[in-house]
Length: 191
Image (cartoon, rainbow, N blue to C red; front, side, top):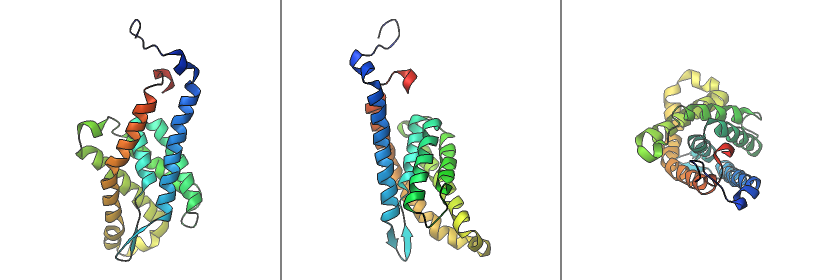
C-alpha cells in the first residue's frame, strides 16, 4: 500500500486478463456442472421427482457475493444452459427470464448476510426459490393451478424449497471462497 492506494505486483498486472478469465471459467464450470446435475439426477421421493436447483443456488450466491450485475450475467447463462439441457419443459430463454427474476430478488439484500446472520440469507434463498418455482409452475402447469392450487403447491413447492435452503450455505461458501481466493487479486477497478 502506497499513499493509501493498493499496489499490485508486476506479475499480477501482467497476468490480469488471465486471472479474470480464470474466475469466469471456474464459475462457468460450476454452472455447467450444476445444470447437468440438476437436469440429470432427480431424487424420487414418494412418486415425486425432487431436484436441487443448483443453478438457482449459484445465481443467488453469485449475486450476493459479486453483485447484481454479475448475478444477471450468470442468471442468463445458467438459464440458457438449463434451456439447452432440458429443452422439453419450456421454450429456450424461459429459464433465463426466470433466473433473471431470481437474481433481482436476491439482490434486494446484497450485504454479506451469510457472515453476520444465518436466518436472513436462508430466508432470501427461500424467497428466491419460491419465486422461481411459482413462476415455473405458472409457466408449465398454469391450467392445473386454477382448480385447487393449495395441495399442488405444497406437494411440489415445499420439498424443493427445503432442499434449496439446506444446500444454500454450502453453495454460498464455495462461491465466496472462490471469489476470495481469486477476486482479491484484482484491482478494485477490475472487480
